[in-house]
Length: 308
Image 1 (tube, rainbow, N blue to C red):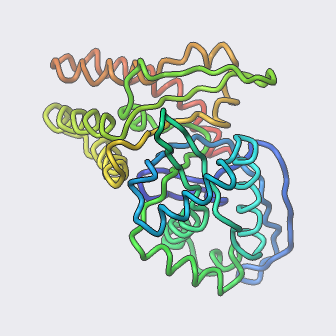
Image 2 (cartoon, one colour):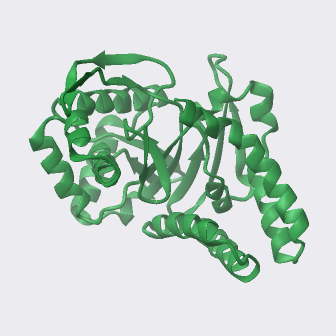
């Protein structure tokens, strides 16, 4: 079962996605008199992450993250995965929430940039959206602790925006619009587990590209409402952050759904921009054909979500 996060991003019921492998607990529960066994089988997901300059945080929050960076220095990739899996498991099994502050940290020259994981906020946003799609009894079954549900409900109403969006099984095609093909980076895993594919840009540059794409779609597509809604959603999310912040698209565990050669050869961002530029030039046939190629490639991964 899946549901939709703010910012146009869908997630598994685990709300974070998590490791593509592993079984982390089970317990018998009842919904409407029916006994069932929920499991925290966590699925591959891609992430869109914002790394904000320390100076862009409000004063108290900035001081907290300065202390964190000085003391911990930020999570490694393996620690990041472990923290998220542990948080998902605790939430779904009705245990106490999320633990101390955790963040990914980047350094660019003298500048320190922080991507807080904000596990509680991401859970709150996801649970609120999930609540609108299923009976309340199902929500209660998956998050049985009423105190936790109340805390998450209060948090979801604050208007805060998470630094991380998650998508299971695929990369949403509208995410690619925020990046230029030249910002693609394939990084070989040092332990031989296959390559990692990321794109990195600034939020300011991403906003310019997203706004350009919205303008092109508005001017050229008569039935582009769904595309515009997706673009507007991610644009509003990016706009919530400092233009100097870094925006990273990480294929993360979704990369495991490709062979190493497929991943190295993937040019989805380039093809999406070829489609946009064809639209801009009035060449609707080329735009449709190019977009169709990308969509077809990713549709195989989207189908896994429904199979799951």
